[in-house]
Amino acid sequence: MGAEQQDCSDEQLMESYRDGDSGAFDVLYGRHKGGVFRYMLRQCGNQGVAEELFQEVWMNLIRARHAYTVQARFSTYLYRLAHNRLIDYYRSQAGGVPASFDDDNAVALESIAGARGSDPAVDVDARQQARRLLQLISELPEAQREAFLLQQESDMSVEEIAQATGVNRETAKSRLRYAIAKLRQGMQ
Amino acid sequence: MRLPNSGRVCNKTIMNEPSAGNIDRDAKLTAYYKAAGDDLPPPALDAAVLAAAHRAIAAKPRFAGPPFSRAWRVPLSMAAVLVLSVSLVTLMREEAPDIVQPQGADLSRRDEKRAPGAMEAAAPATATLADSQKSSGLGLKPSSSSSPSGLGLRSSTDPGMPGRLRLESSDPHRTGPTLSGAASAPPSTPEAFPLTSAARDMRPSESAAKMRLPARDEAQNAASAERAATPVAKTLTKLETDNNARVSDDRRAPGAAGVVGRSAPAASDAAEGRVRQDPIGPHRFQGQPPSGVTEARPDTPAAKIASPGVLARPAAVPATPALSGDSSASVADTLRSHVVLPPEVWLARIELLHKQGRLEEARVSLAEFRKRYPAHPLPASLNAILQ
Picture 1 (tube, each protein chain N blue to C red):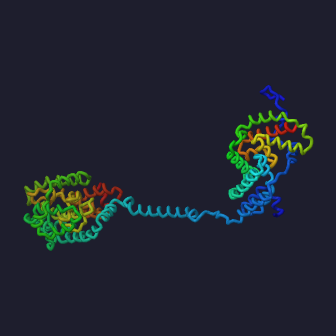
Picture 2 (cartoon, chains in turn blue, orange):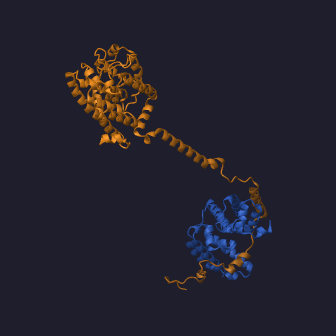
Picture 3 (cartoon, each protein chain N blue to C red):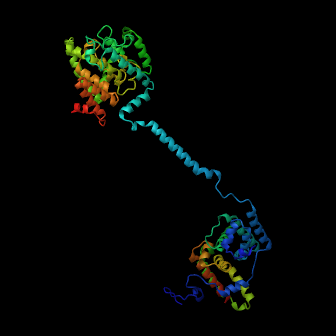
C-alpha cells in the first residue's frame, strides 16, 4: 500500500482498482469499511445480518467495478449500493420495506411526539449519553435513521443523501431534519 | 416563532436549520455518536472481502474490445453496399441503353436484340440489294437503263434462284396473285426462315400451290389497321389510295408510255421497299435478298405495311399493271424504303432523288424525315427542297 494512494481521493482509488490496481481497493476498503458496517449494523440491528449485508455490498462493488465512472462522490456511490441492498433485505423480511421509506412525515411527527417523554437527566456522563443516543437512533424511523447515519458516517450533504437513498432533496432534508430534532429532544 | 400563514408555534429545535438549505451537523450529537462506539467488521470479513477483490483483479481480464464479428460488421456492410451499388449501376447501363441512344440507333439495337442472327443476314441482303440493282439496272440508275418493256425489275433478277418470287413479273402465269399471296404469308413462327428458304427453293407453281394464304382478308384488315395507326402509315395509305385509283386507269390503258417509263425506278424502289420496309418488326433483315417477295413478312404488321400492294391486290387482278409506273406508288415505295434507313443514309437517298429530278419523292421523303428526326441537321441542298 503506497503512501501516494493514501493521498488519493476515493474516486481515483476506485478508478485505479477498476483499471487493475488491487492495492487501491485496500485503501478504499480501509476508509469506508467502518462506516458501511455501522450503517448496516444500526439499520438492521443484527450483527450477523449486518456482516452478511456488509460483505454483499462490497462484493457488488467489486463486480461493478468495470462500469464505474466518476459521476459523484465515491461514498455516495458506495452507500447507494448499501441502501439498495438494505431495501432488498427489508423486502425479504415479513414486514417488507418499512413505512418510513414511503411516508416519513407522518411517522416523523409521531416519533417526535413520542420522544418527548424521555428524561435526559438520567444520563450523566458521556458514555451514558452515547448509549442513550444509540438507543434513540434505534428508535428512529428507518428512513430518518438512514439519513442521520449517512450524514454521520460519510459526512454527506442533503443532496448526497438524496442521491444515495434515491429520493429528492426535500425528502432527504425532511428526513434528516426530523431525525436530528428527535435525537436532540431525546438527549435533552 | 410564528409561521407566516399559521397560528401555531413551531418547535424551536425543529426550525433551527441553516439558511443555506443544508442541515448542519449537531456537534453534540456527533460527539455522542462518536463516543457510542467504533464498531468494525470482524477481521475475517475484512480478509474475505479483500481476497475477493484481489481475485477479481488477478482473474483473466475480460476482452474489452469488440468481438471479431462486431469489429468487421461495419466494413463488411460498407463493402456489400458498394458491390451492390456498382452491380446495379452496371446492370442498369446494360439494360437501359435506349435512354441515351438516338432513335435510329435504338431501332437498330432493338433489332439486334430481338434477332441476333438478323445482322448476319442483313449483310448479304444488302449486298444482294446492290447486286439486284446493278443487275436490273434499276435502283439508283435512271429509268433509261431499264429494259425496254419496263419489266426489268419484274423479270428475274437472279435466275439462279427460282424461289425468289418475282411479284412484278410480267408473266401472269409465273407470278400470279396467288403466288404473291403465298409468298407474302409465311408463318410467323420462328421457323419462318426455314420455311421461307423452302419456299424459295420451290418452283413458283409449287409455291403457289403450297403457300396459300388462308386468311388473306384478315391480313388485309390488319394491314389497314396498322397503316392507320402511325402517321407514316397514314401517308402510305393515302398514297396507296391514289395508287389504287390510278391502277384502275392503268388497267384501262396498260400500254401507256408513261407507265412503262416510270416502271423501272418505281419497281426498283418497290423492290427495295419490300426488302427493307419494316420499321417495327425485327425480321426485316431476315435472310432474304431485297428483290425477293418472300423477304416481306406479311404476318407482321410492318410487313403488311411494307407490301400493301401485294396483300391488297385482288387475286384476280394481275400484278403487272398495278405497280408499274405510278408516281404515287413510287413515292409510297420510296418513303417505305427510306423510313427504316439510318438518318444519314436516308438523307443521302433524298439527295440522290433530288439529283435525279424525282422532286416529289424527295419532298415527301424529306418531310417524313423531318417528322422522325426533327433535330437532325439537313444539308443546304435539302433545305432548298423544304422551302
